[in-house]
Length: 454
Image 1 (cartoon, rainbow, N blue to C red):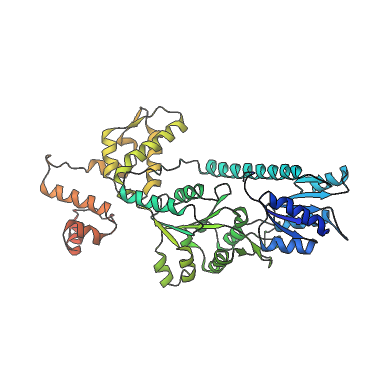
Image 2 (tube, rainbow, N blue to C red):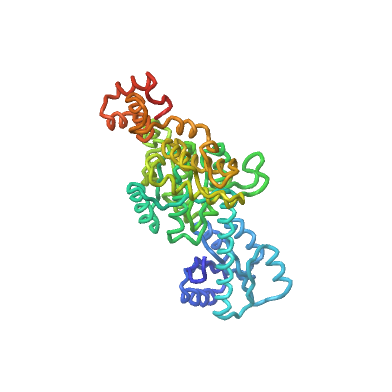
């Protein structure tokens, strides 16, 4: 967050006149302000909406602000709390910082002092978001996939995605595994109004239902065996930003009503805590499953599907992006060459031909692994066919050339193989070839086309 962004602020003070004065000053700076006269009102406000920063008086009538401070941070751990007091002293300032206060302002303070406190808060939040983003990139240890394309169908997909990016619409990204759904989701986030806030990813298939619920919504100490301390939610970390649910089709059925509630009402509960919390998150989800079939089979809630599928963006497989294949391979080569410190500059003609002929069932992820392998194994400045995985070597050795010394039978078999590799289904392949599906099946069974094709 930058200093120019509006804050959502909470003012906690038992004096109505001071609350009004502070509210007027803060709203004149363009910020949104909620007032609370005591600890009960303050905690109730925090449970209903998200705040960036709270101004907390040290004395609240018969209550003490320093006793309320830990409770505020327990409900909203990322909240910045600025202590305000007419009884400023070194001991109280030290105690406030020890309990988690962000700043300390003695009364009376000027509007400029308020601006300084808010600017500091914005700076710290911005740095934290940048660190989180860098940690995620370092953790992946993989290059970003270029989103430039020479394929009209792929460009149409990107145009739709980036048209939707600045809106608040929930987006469902569909496509085969490895097509770059996560990369596109992050690119959409960076083009959204939430770009200065966090982009948080939850991998739905990676955990058991219990651990996934804890990861997504958080838990309190003692909620289950092994819960030795409170754990904040990924939802909370994404507050104000984007929550990306990867492989949403694997979300356990028991968690689906809770996700639906988050999407509809912006509310959730930690495991073991009935307190209702709020989170302002934009949802993006990705799947390689047929969710319509999962809905019919009772594995996925129909109401959740329609909530997620407000905007659907389907990424094409790499086999349908032939013009992008070699530019993308060279982009990946450049990344891995720099990472390994090797002067690898390209591919041999034989390697390029084999890559162009291969179906890439693993899509961009498989291409990335193949190029990384090639960079590691080559001792030259180029990657040859012998440095690529075995399936590409087989594709290269089986190539036939029109006009070359090959039989019509071999030409037909190669043509069938390539059509099957690029078509989304056997029915579509038979339509392209102009033959019945039963004829195509017999040719594959006889061995004229590879059995492992789609």
